[in-house]
Length: 356
Image 1 (spheres, rainbow, N blue to C red):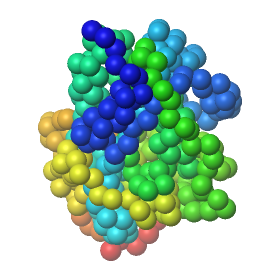
Image 2: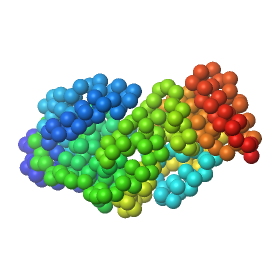
Image 3: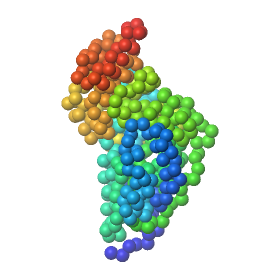
Image 4: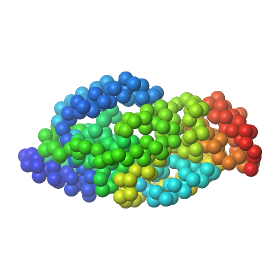
């Protein structure tokens, strides 16, 4: 099969991507030299905490040809996931009896959805070019997603380190196709448009954004509630509030997200009432219920033990009603030492304060 004009193919790829539900697509080369230096400094500083996988693969993350030999270009895509209005999210955060789950995790697992769409996009390309070398990714391998997206013209990394698109903001997932097709590249976004704004640094509950464009993962609530396998340091527990899975504060205050639109993907909409659930309700789940309701969700990877750990901390921050105390006491003898320790901490917080 004769390979078509690559400039025409590049335009077609973007049209197909839009048809498949992606809000943007761009193409870049694989030179990540400047990002490699910054990433390695971040790792050497230990700011990745216990996320050993961030360092495990050496330079496969920053040199795409080492991960997928023969790669010449990366097709980078972006899909919006915002499931509800900022006001609805703020109302959830302001109610200490309710559980706050990062909005990306309320619906179906984005990894599977986006990889499936990227596979469909690759098949459309293959129908035109014949067999070609490619692999699809979505937060599932050592890929430097945000620098690649910036090089592909999809946006810039904001001071909170998330990718921001001028017209759509930062409530989006990224995905990639590594390919051996030498497609023409799109112009990169070469500057940040954050200006003098420090809203994300100022709002971070734990001070995890230690400087513009620099995140200390060890302080980040997303890391503490999702990535950290052991006990949450006591110094951060009060600041976690009612956030039991991730944190969206830096995105909620970002001025660029005033332009964000609600997702058109039904799969990203809340399931099982997780956007309205109370802490007591979720803390009462059995492991079987947790596994059933987290099926097909990014929450599943947390595991039941960490789920209870996180909710125990949030209940320690909630008003000390008789119902809250009773819920905690029912888990006080849990088989997991980690759960028992966090429940004990939560009960101690209420012993220090008058019960409601």
